[in-house]
Image (cartoon, rainbow, N blue to C red; front, side, top):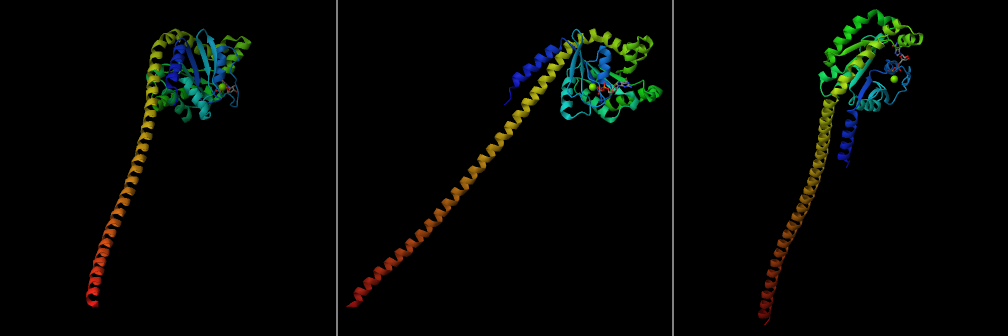
Length: 300
Ligand SMILES: Nc1nc2c(ncn2[C@@H]2O[C@H](COP(=O)(O)OP(=O)(O)O)[C@@H](O)[C@H]2O)c(=O)[nH]1
Ligand SMILES: [Mg+2]
């Protein structure tokens, strides 16, 4: 049996440590620019950017004191990686959901992923307030052409499919930002959308930090509930094991009693058979005795 108390205590310790920090975690389908976006925010290339999927683990980088950016492999990853990412989402203060807007609206896997992440938060409203949808690749031609229409569609889809309202939407271009930085072009930097997102995050940091006390309480309550549910599951399993053992023993006892009864009735039927044969023997014997008597008398 697992040491649940120890596991629980470790979780509480991790929650306490988290309560000092702000975790900003990205999410979304792989190759949609999650790592690039975080590198832009950091002005450093610390998260691997690639066209093929090589990010298999979450990676944590410090942005400011007590403020962390957490890069995830993304959705449509293998189940095992998703499990790691989903564990990380539970610890998030802010979710940056990244979508490559030149692919059009959010697809079903993106919306499903959003719903899954939502389910890890204490409530829907809280989640919506801590969700930033970041649309990348606005530099691509088909994105810039239809941007407002796509944004409207995405907002409606998220509202209808995930029941979320009031979340923030930002539109960015990572290459535009990098070019602007490299060439010191302020307009390009502004038009990349990165400073707007960065300012929003910076402005909200004190508020999110202040919320940590409430989050800590909610997370501990949730862990307790999970812990109790786990113990109840274990208890149920043990109870059903005991029940099946008791059934087995009862069955064996019944088999034994049945055999015993068979043996006794066999003995009883043998006994009456013997008694019958005894009486036949007695009769024969007395017949023999009287015949002998007759023979003795009639001989003379
Ligand atoms: N055109 C364009 N390409 C981008 C943008 N952001 C990221 N990319 C490219 O998209 C690919 C995947 O980016 P990456 O950050 O690794 O995506 P991740 O898998 O979601 O982390 C890379 O080739 C990036 O250079 C963007 O804003 N515009
Ligand atoms: Mg990545």
